[in-house]
Image (cartoon, rainbow, N blue to C red; front, side):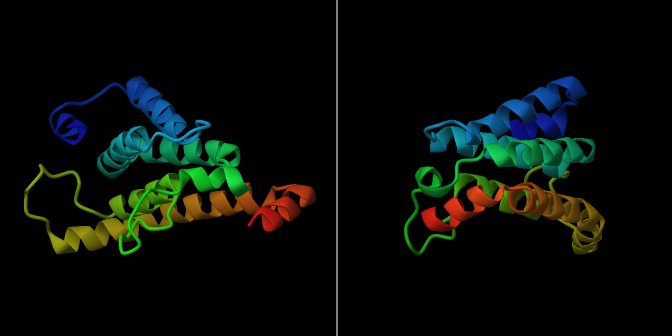
Length: 160
């Protein structure tokens, strides 16, 4: 898949930015296609984990897209179809994407698939990822909670 392409080839920065932009829009359509969201998620997680230079662009695109996400009753259609005992139960496609991006920031994704991972390297990556993850969390709080108009806040509570 795309993971192997990124292991073996270097793509132009402009192409990577276009892929990020296009992939994130899979989460903003009016009616979700979970197969498309899953493919976009794999692409974004692979890029985020393997190409440090693209991480900030992915975060900026997420922050720009976050206010456009459906809310209230419309958001319910984006909950992943998963069994109650599944780790994905109750998650939206976008939430799962965010969780996987955070996870990928400290996993050893630069090695070829199946290669042994160095635990000390994983711990170092986790420490290096902290500022980036703080930017993501802070940006989401700012965009989704602190910048909402009061009437929209009340509507979100009522739509619950």
